Length: 100
Image 1 (tube, rainbow, N blue to C red):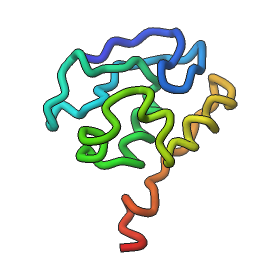
Image 2 (image 1 turned 135 degrees about the vertical axis):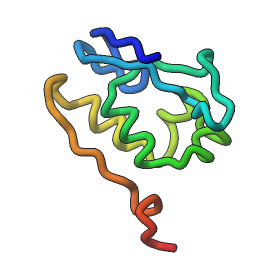
Image 3 (image 1 turned 120 degrees about the vertical axis):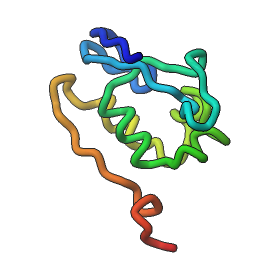
Image 4 (image 1 turned 90 degrees about the vertical axis):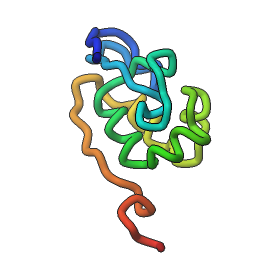
């Protein structure tokens, strides 16, 4: 059940954007409604492009852990973008299969 509202993203802090509910620990890995954050749809998409569900469940199950992870440059970048800007989502090289 996604609830939408216009407020501030819990992950990057951008305001005046449409938000959705995101499971910090994926449901298929045992996440519950208690493990959710309110963030932007593009933020959720980018998180899943950068990390596998296994990574999210095992080591990145909180907002603070996501903010401080080495791949979190996206969060710092998007925080500076205008609220109305549409952003492209790109998979990390490790998720694409490069460097294996």
